[in-house]
Image (tube, rainbow, N blue to C red):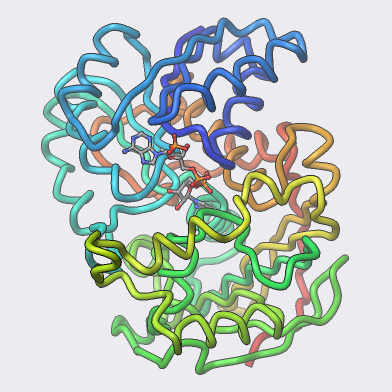
Length: 401
Ligand SMILES: NC(=O)c1ccc[n+]([C@@H]2O[C@H](COP(=O)([O-])OP(=O)(O)OC[C@H]3O[C@@H](n4cnc5c(N)ncnc54)[C@H](OP(=O)(O)O)[C@@H]3O)[C@@H](O)[C@H]2O)c1
C-alpha cells in the first residue's frame, strides 16, 4: 500500500519498526531515520533477520532542522511521517510535513526543551495550515495519550450519553531489577513525574504538589499497587472532546524504591533542567543524569511482570447511572520475545503503527490537526485486538475515591 518515514530509533521506534514490518500489506516500505544512523541500521538488520516483506531503508537526520527533514522527505517521498523521536522535535517535523504535504503522527505533545511544560497549544496552532494543505496530523497515538483517548471515544460512542468522571490508571507492575531506572526516555520521564500534579474539575485545572495525591488500586493480573495523581497531556484534549465531563484524573503507579531515589536526586539538584557550568562546560544536570542511568532500550531482557493501563468511566445512559472500565494487560517478557522491547515501549509503539495505518488506509484521513479521540474509535479498537494489545471490559469496576 504505502511508505512510512519513521523518525527516531529508540525504544518506541524499535516497536513501531517491528510492527510496521509485521504489517507489510499496509507498510510496503519504511525508512528509519534518526540522529545516530547505526541505531537505524541495527533495527533494519533485526527485522530483515525475521524475514519481513517490507522494504526497509535507513537515513541520518537531525530532526531539529526543518531543512534536513524537508530534504529527507523529498528524497524518500513517504505517505506518512511517524514521529517517535522526542517531544522537542514535534514542531520542526510538523513544519517539514507542511512543506512537503505529508501526513503526520506522533505519540507525545510538544514540549520546549528549556521549559518543562507540555500542552497542546503549539500543535493546535497548526490546525488551519494542515487543513489548507489537505494533510492530516494525528496527535498522541501512543498508549497514554493514545489508546486511552480511543477508549474514551469508544465509551462515549457505545455506552454513555454523558460521561461525568474519567480516571485513567497507568500501572506498570514490571520489575527490571535495578534500584532506579526509567522505562522510557529518562529525561522526558523525570520531567513528567517531578512536575506538579493536576487534574480537571468542572472545566478548571486543579493543581497539586508532585505526588501529593496517592491511592491504592488492585489491578487485574498485577495486584495491589500505590498510584499517584500526575498531570498528563490527554486531560487537556479529553476535557474538550468528551461530552459532559466533570472531572478527569490521571494516576500512575510507582514503587517506593523509585520514589525514594527520585526524591534524593531532586534534593541534590540532579533533576534540574537549568544549565550549570562544570569544568568550563555548560551541562544540564538532568541530561547528565540520563547519561548515567540505564538505557531504557537495554532493560527489556531483564524486565518481568505486566502493565495494566485503562480508563474507568462513570456517567449516564438512558437516564441511568453507569460505570465502565476498559483496559489492556501487557506482559513485558512476551513483548520482549516478539519485538526485543519491554511492554512500555510496546504499548506505545503498537498504537503508533495503528494510528499511521488508520490515516494511510483512509479510515482516519481528514485534513487538519486532531487528537485521537476525535476519530471513530471502532476500527482502532479492532486493530488493537489484532496487533497485540487486546482489551478487557468490566461493567462493575471498583472505583477510585
Ligand atoms: N504516548 C505514550 O504512551 C508514550 C509512552 C512512552 C513514550 N512516549 C514518547 O515516545 C517518544 C520516544 O520515546 P523513547 O522511549 O523511544 O525515547 P528514546 O529511546 O530516547 O528514543 C528517542 C529517539 O529519538 C532520537 N532523537 C532525539 N533527538 C533527535 C534529533 N534531534 N533528530 C533525530 N532523532 C532524534 C534519538 O536518536 P539517537 O538515539 O540517535 O540520539 C532516539 O533514537 C517520546 O516522545 C516519548 O515521549 C509516548
